[in-house]
Length: 214
Image 1 (spheres, rainbow, N blue to C red):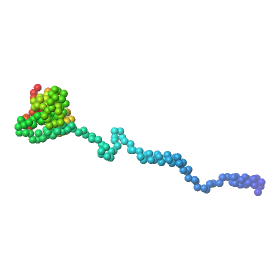
Image 2 (cartoon, helix red, strand yellow):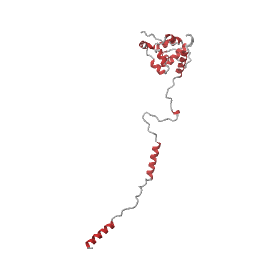
Image 3 (cartoon, rainbow, N blue to C red):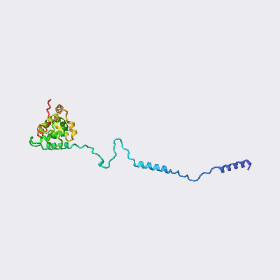
Image 4 (tube, rainbow, N blue to C red):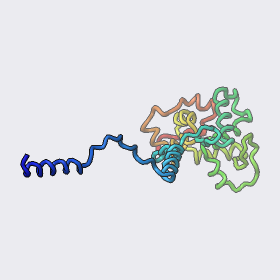
């Protein structure tokens, strides 16, 4: 071969000799995280596991023990329950005669059931305790006092009273009228709210009667 070809072959051989060889080794695995990183990851996982679920606005977490739950409904005062029970029994089985010694307790119970006992406490100047089976001292201690007080404070339709007393004190307060005139006006507008006079007198609720002609 000519010198030119020899030089060309020598250059090609030199180039092939110095070229990097293709690597056949398998790639090494990625470096494992350091100990400090491992600790941080473990702590984060533990925190996420023990964190409570998000609670929405106005929601409470579930209480497993029922003893932790408070009474949601307020209990009525004992005197109210006593009065209500007394009136219920009286209405179911009214005594045969009016002069039976039970009229005063009935009217006292009516004052308590309608929530009017605080009004009597404010207006009464007497310090004598009423002979009452109920656990409240500030009640009228004569039949006359009880009638006068109810006539001037208990403005309620008898039918509304009988219906609302089944739902409790709050319902009774809603159907009480501010004045005798207001009650009479409603009875005139709604004649169906008139109760049978003979029955009203029989059970002793005539103290709640009002003249509808004003």
